[in-house]
Length: 225
Image (cartoon, rainbow, N blue to C red; front, top):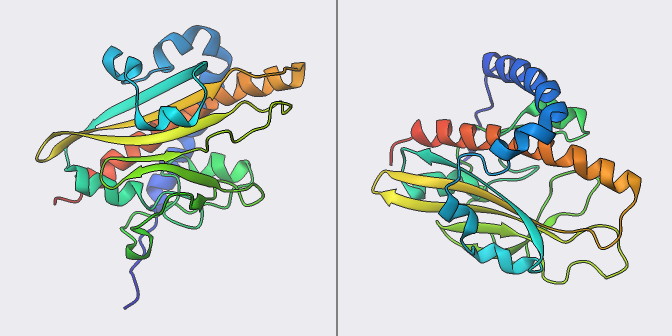
């Protein structure tokens, strides 16, 4: 039986397009000041300092970003949206326009896709059509999905080792916390170009992640389990 796929409505697409275009020029240049509030947007002190399962995928000397949101839905409901994350899957749940400007032909799906309700360790999820996929480094159904790989980079690369993880923490039968956590190794080597790239990457990551969290909350709360 063919799955009925629901895409983001044209009205929501236009509204989020406007929102993204307004926030982008506000957040990026203000980041030296605004990062103290947005680096760990929505997360508690305990959530930021806690050692999470995906942290093992990066070295001990890393910069971390933990962002979180409350959702009035069960962990099982939220997991159904999380597990289908990815390009050519359920999408990224963020600003489609900004993703397409970056050359990513993503379509964010607003329905559960049965064919993408399972993942395996080391399975790779695409974020960009021209880049290799991110391997699943740690996985626990209904609890966490972590992307990264131990010893992923050799010592002579300019690229820092990274992990990016999604966590669901139950608060009750129909309530939970959804967290996104990035662990980024300090660059082994640096250039002016690399410094500029990282300076732009961090605020853009926040912009896209806060929209992702808010979208998953809307989708999960619209489906009662």
